[in-house]
Amino acid sequence: MPAASLQSSPANTTLTTAQGSTISTASLLTVPLSALPAQTLKVSLSGTLIQITLRQRSTGLYADFDANSTRFLSGVLCQDRTWLVRAAAIGLPGDFLFADTQGQKNPDATALGSRFLLLYRPGWTV
Image (cartoon, rainbow, N blue to C red; front, side, top):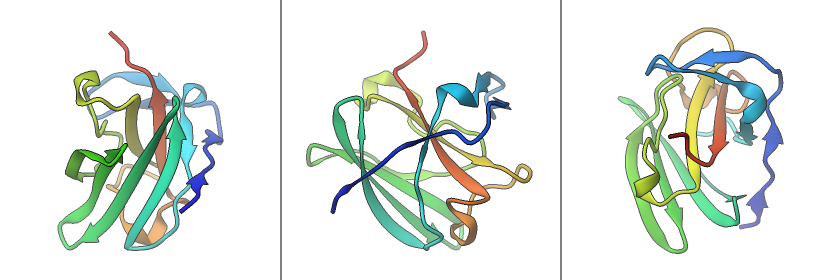
């Protein structure tokens, strides 16, 4: 499976995360997704090849994160504007969040890559 190419975020806007912090989308990269209920993609981030697996279940969209044949996170519930990794100690080179471009609904597979964007923030803030 070839690595997906990251894209710059579509517009320079400010998002307020569920944790109450604000972040400029200019500092985020968009991970390309398809509107599929189950998908796995690999993306090179900060020199690390990360595998992201997304699965739609009746209770929501869930994500797994792997790097170098090691599972770092499994079964993370994806919610709108909520950081998925949340800690540098996990071992991933940055953090991810989903953003609803048309409101504040939690992501579902029917609109991944269009209404629901997966955004990546490299590095960690202190």
